[in-house]
Amino acid sequence: MELHISKKAAQVSPSPTLSIDAKFKQMKKQGVPVVGFGAGEPDFDTPDNIKDSAIEAIKAGVTKYTPASGTVELKQAICKKMHRDYGLDYDPANIVVSNGAKHSLTNVFTCICDPGDEVIIPIPYWVSYPEMVKLADGVPVYLETTEEQDFKFTAQQLKEAITDKTRALVLTTPSNPTGMIYSREELKEIAKIAVENNIYVVFDEIYEKLIYEGEHTNIATLGEEIKELTIVVNGMAKAYAMTGWRIGYTASNAALAKAMSNVQSHATSNPNSMAQYASVEALEGDQSAIDVMKAEYVKRRDYMVERINSIEGLSCKKPSGAFYIFMNVKELLGKKHYGKTIHSASELCDDILDRALVALVPSEGFGIEGYVRLSYATSMESIQTGLDRIESYIKGECKA
Ligand SMILES: Cc1ncc(COP(=O)(O)O)c(C=O)c1O
Image 1 (cartoon, rainbow, N blue to C red):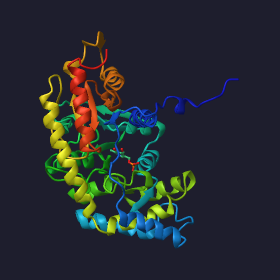
Image 2 (cartoon, helix red, strand yellow; image 1 turned 30 degrees about the horizontal axis):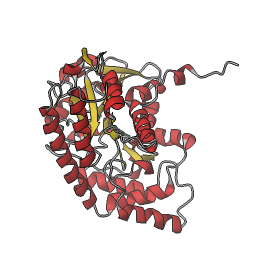
Image 3 (cartoon, helix red, strand yellow; image 1 turned 180 degrees about the vertical axis):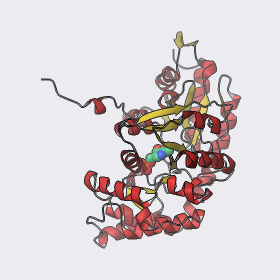
Image 4 (cartoon, rainbow, N blue to C red; image 1 turned 120 degrees about the vertical axis):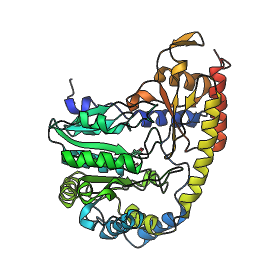
């Protein structure tokens, strides 16, 4: 029997980062002493005040449907946060709360793309953007960047990529996978081009609280016109260690928010009611847990950057934010390791997982060859062990 799968669905490949994480967790479950650098997930637990708030919600019967695009209380808390952090004024009609920032992004592309519309995505990109755009019948248009330019595109590149079909630019700062941040000056140039060409900026700032050097600028603060065109995407997952709770949100012009709310009302209805309740506590309660996590992340980042740059064949730039290191492995490619020529970052990661028991994410999924992403959202002990093993692998000391 031939079972039909739509062309649209059949062309989607599974998220490589989630697959690697699943493989890592499976190996761990089987008792294999594997070290994982794959996860885009804080290793910290959700702070107690947030957990307690969810328990309170369950006990108080906050267990029913809420408005499809989120509770008024959470939308107001998000508006207050935007005002507090950036002086940006939104009201609840601008906010849509969804099942994680991933869901927010799929709503965005569904509501801004007609078939054939183009969305500009800088490389290296977070793995899901191109697939999401394609699922929304849009066409991803890529901007190449290099390590020398800190993996950031130039204003000139952006101008050249814009056509009359361009609907949006996706901008992620701090970036996953590179941890680089766009400066205020760079964002000013980008905003000017977006306004001149009337294109949206899908501004993914989910790592905004995890900045170790420099300053995060929200592009919507750079003028009324760019604010209208900016779709801020954010969520609870990274800042509050709430990956499993699945709460993300957008702040956008009200017309787009209404369209996304309508789509969501048919697709999923509201995001989890208790998680929404607890997200109010996350945004309005004690914020000190973020500083504790940040202090730990910065220690790990510094250790890793120094260590990686001391290993022959490896190098990396120091990221300014998020919790990823984008490690250059080009010197190791095209060479023999353990009797076999390794051609690509994915072959290298497979071999390192098999021989050295370290899970890494190869850069092909991010649209670029020759790099490996390491997450430092894992303990210092695991980081040390993992890097020791990678070093042994490169020195040819692992099992043949
Ligand atoms: C850049 C970026 N945007 C969005 C997301 C999705 O976050 P959420 O867990 O809220 O769906 C991630 C998660 O890895 C991410 O790295």
